[in-house]
Amino acid sequence: MGKVFLWMAVVLFGIYLVKTQYLGSKTWEPFRDGCLAAGGASEAQCSCLADYIHERFSDQEVQRIMNNQVTDPVFTQRVNTAVQAGTLACRSPGA
Image 1 (cartoon, rainbow, N blue to C red):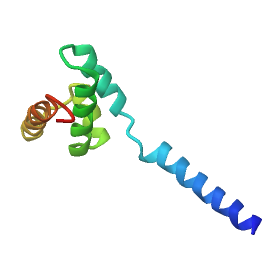
Image 2 (image 1 turned 90 degrees about the horizontal axis):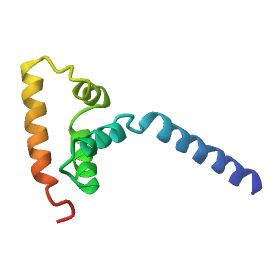
Image 3 (image 1 turned 135 degrees about the horizontal axis):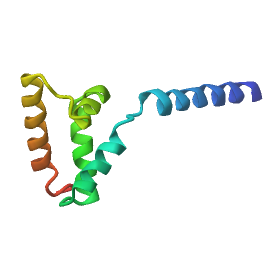
């Protein structure tokens, strides 16, 4: 019975490692910090906007947005629309 619990612990630890190292966003916190540094928004609003943007764009796309490397007009329009909608949606988070 002890071996079963040991194997369960090893498997759960493996899942935890994969989830934290490979499935977590590397751009969420820098995006939120940039939002806060811009001023005019609370931490809750910036967290809400970071969630909103990360639901709609991949980490690579968010990194391109943060690096100002958006050159495609269609993608630029998609970014502008998402930021505007996210700003409106996060105006009063939790409401």
